[in-house]
Image (cartoon, rainbow, N blue to C red; front, top):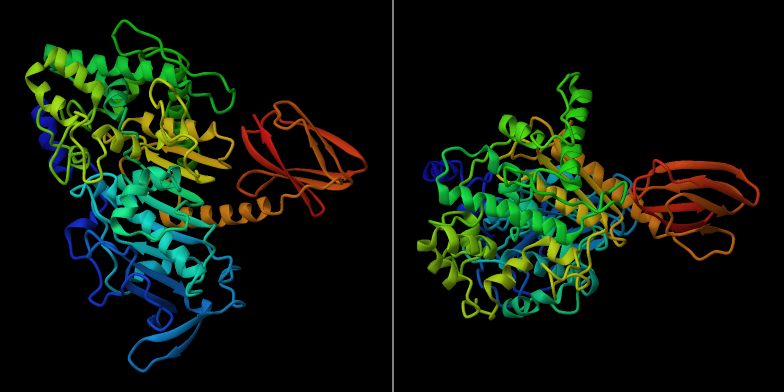
Amino acid sequence: MKKQIILLTILLGLGFGCMAQPGGGSSGASTTYDFGTAINGLWQYNSSSDVYYIVGLFYCASPAAESYEQMGIFVPGAYMDATANGDGTYTCTVNTTATVNGYTSATAPIVFPVNTSGYSAQSAPSGYSSSVATYTVKGFVYLWAGCRGRDHGAPLGVTDMKAAIRYFRYLKAEQQAVPGNVDLIFTFGHSGGGAQSSLLGASGNSSLYDDYMTAIGAKTGYDDNVCGSMCWCPITNLDQGDAAYEWNMGLTRSNLGSADQNISKGLAAEFAEYVNAIGFKHPTSGATLTLSATDNGYYQSGSYYEYVMEVINDAVTRYNTYNGASVSTYSTTDATALYSFAAAHKTATKGLGAFDDYDQKGQAENTLFGIAGTAGHFDKFLAELVQQYASSYYSDFSADLATSNVDAVGKTVEERLMMYSPLYYLIDNDTYYNGGGSGTSTVAKYWRIRTGITQGDAPLCTEIDLALALQNRSDVTSVDFETIWNKGHTEAEDSGSASDNFISWVEECAAATGVAEQTTTDENLKVYPNPVNGLVTVEATGNVLIYNGMGQVVKQINGVEEKASFSTEGFAAGVYYVKSGSAVQKLVIE
């Protein structure tokens, strides 16, 4: 049975859904420009879309894969004052007054695509692409960077994209050659691209990447963090991927032999141990989420289990609302409810382990965490179970996970796995992330996470745990997380197109950032207690507006003469802003 599942996964394109993988075709421009080249006189123009663009920019001094480590920049025509050079190129200077969709060259958001399904390489642009007009017509700058993929090994894809972001900031600061607000960079991707988008959001400016950046000659002195990350169906948190998969979907497997059944249950037990050690918090109540043992060995009980069922029911409710349907919700406490859901809508489509294939090393992630394209094992928890129940395969695990098995900069498989796990940067936990990345990175303030609930590519826990970790951080302003009923491994949305919804989200985040930037210390506005979970007192005069993290007014109090109070009951936990006149104060609701 396991071999049949693996074959099906391979036939479906390594289990990474329907998006085309860009790594297999040609990459890069025919004319390239050396790292540090002055670019003002090198622009080209597409008149039908009114877009100035430049491609073939090497974003590092010593590229390891020249055809991929290039980038292109595409900008609305209004942001440039151009003079034709007579050879098809233009000399451009940034126009500081023109507007597109309410943005100027100084305020325009920058969007950064991560089209790396299956952790494949991303092709660098070879010329103009009409697809960018969807974003430039909205006043956005489109930054398209090629990058290395799984055949080169983790963490090189994210390394390359970080280098490109640094280089864009250099072009803006030192050459004054590009428009756009470098504090408003938003990444977006699906599947393995969603995973790497989440990594760019979680690992901003992390020194863990320094050795890799140095190896390719990335620009120093500039940041690589981003403002927001859009993640559709991110295949990530692979340190617990195999365990979470069995906890969520292991009960849907049939005809497992004794060894595989023990491994499946052992992985589910490992995930329960992980959840109980991490201490995720319920996003509304703040209660610690835990798992408890059940007779079937899959730990289908406890407050974490109940929260997962809440997420499923929320997807059902929204589906019914949008579609006039009457799909039934599930019990949140019945220990068979998750199995009933999974058996009908989310069966296991991958073998054991779902991401670290224990007997063939045939998953994309095996290549990603191998050394220089040679597939390798990476799941130490699976290794322990294989040693106990399928010992003939253990020697490969032992060799691959050995501390002597290092990449070109001397990093072990375990170190590289942690670098490619967003929660490593988001959670400070002695048991699982001891000495890890928490506190070492600049985390994106804005997150939008969507997943098709029926996909068999990854467990619901992947996106749920990412959202929970983000919602528990005071430096994250907003986490917009939803699972989408009746959708699979795709750019899942309740309604509307993925691109339109992403654009609207970027616009909201940009507006919210504008409110946040107004935050002041003003004796004419006092807000206390802060943080709060209950009654808030505001000392002010006049009208008082309360904004959520997306810049939306969620409450207004008119005619305050000296002070006023309001209850936070019904407010989601997170960052809010209280505004009176020109004074703005940040308020944290717990």
